[in-house]
Length: 414
Image 1 (cartoon, rainbow, N blue to C red):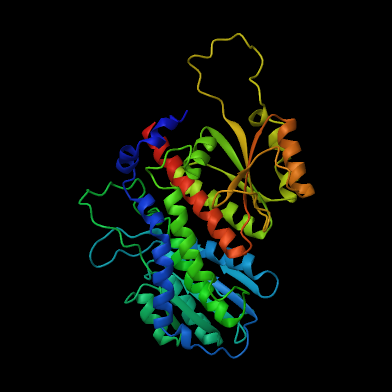
Image 2: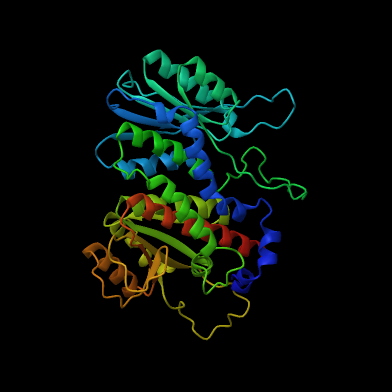
């Protein structure tokens, strides 16, 4: 069981946060601004597109693929957005310095057989050293695809971009101060944890590019405003804010000791729920199942009738439970984007929606509440009411990213 008093101890949280994930998330807004500035300097502001691509293929791994899913949610049906995950893995080579190779160095990607001159390939990498992505860019060049590469300046992938006549865009790494603490030995050295704020370094150049191509209908100032929203979320979710005023700490406490079911209504909330499931696995070591209404009601129905869905203890009420661990139960988290329905005096950022809230819900959301109530499963609902879909997405992701990190840090101290 999580001791939630640990969430109100900023010093303990700082000691537990050895890779400074909270600091990385706090700097997400600055990374968005830097990425926008450097993308313009790289030539994006001078780009004069000649028509729209038939398909945008986004290749990478980790949060680069999450960025592709977010782009698909924002673009809707106007343009086909296809994430390209790796399809194979081979043993990576040891570099000349003798450093242990990471798994991503041996990943391979394959361009779909139908890809050609009408399509755009975006290759995005935080490392820039994956031979598989370099090979994919070469495949696309041979097929006549337009190519854009997001990678750190001076990396092998950035240099390869020039050889295949790609538009090179910068990947902005986190600028964390060196505190002189020795690095903890990784449990799996070839599978390092990803920077939790890397998503914004992948997503910002991608959205700036697709906005220039006319693939997303975003306001001209939508991306700079995202940086401001991320800054505001960092203030709300800062480590020294008490749990009762910090929405991310409150959400982390609710999810402790549960099996989270992350339900979403609509593509925007769906992308945030998928991202949250990945962050809970990576940052908190917790499994979670994500899905969108209404199909998730039938997909997850069986879990409510099993042991995890029971609101009460099993039979044998009088047995001694002192030495027994607390049982795991389901916890439903419902994420929604409901533009223009903010209540009077509602706080900034996604707000928890109470059960007696009188604002209208869809039939699917009402059915989700009834299903949870019928099986004594706690359902917590968060809704973003900002009109712009990108801003709603940023609000939801900022909240859930901080919550995943807080849950992992508090669990590590318990």
